[in-house]
Picture 1: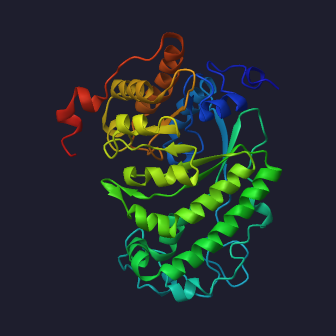
Picture 2: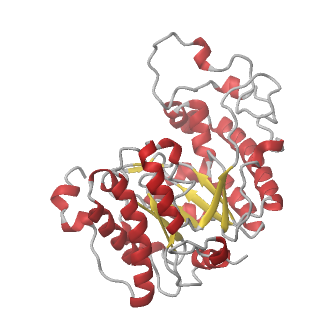
Picture 3: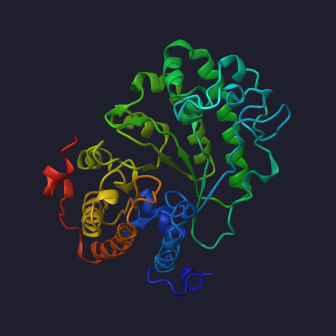
Length: 380
């Protein structure tokens, strides 16, 4: 059924599957795509009074994709549990921790390598029947499945951030052994989804960056993660699907390696951490940019007009006539402290200005960080 029939009341009908594929591949100068729902918008995490206006907004402005997550395994289970990341008996550190003991948020589930190496080969089991149960019925839109977390974040979840970074120097053999197992698991999940759920892309979240640089050098990334990234991404491409990657922080030093590994769509090109204009000029022929309007400052502390100005700036920088290659979104998961009017402004201006550039061409709008640097750059 045509999309205008599927979404008869939409002010802006979503792009078709083929339009999305062409936009990503740089073959069609349609309006910038807008993708927030399922990835960065989770209504259950927002106040009740925000639900109705956001639902109404997205009836007028439907998301350009259908998205679902692979069901996430539990962190810990008992021996024989088919769907947990660790099935070693009593491995959960919460069982042995003193009540009230302080543990860093990224260290709560940290376990030792001798425990990780006891985990069953099929824990989690990629053939677990309910794994893909959240896939929606196809409705004519481009379809994306997310596998979360990806390699570095899974290593980090097992070991805690402190240990995982030390492991890069002390536990190379164990890292490779873990990444081999995770790669095999993810390839089977991808195969199942490709053959049974009619998907167009797989999205992988892997936060490799901090505010002022990556967690590791390019050399360490290429040694411990790149071979597995490339193997997984090549496998996605073997099914004629795209690779989407979410990667927070300043990953400028890893960009060449990520593109070489096979990334097609990259999020978020983080404002105040990366230089948008420089990234576009260097990689405009190699990537589709899934650009997030800044959550740390702009959406949280700016006005609705600040947000709209930033949408115009991002569109002018990244959208390419006759090619597209721009998807607009939030730089990370929308938080409840973001004013409702700012999210509404983001979505509305993305469509309004997106249609304008198709008809009239791009403008030369500046970022709010350029028009008011004293306010927005004081901490950078």
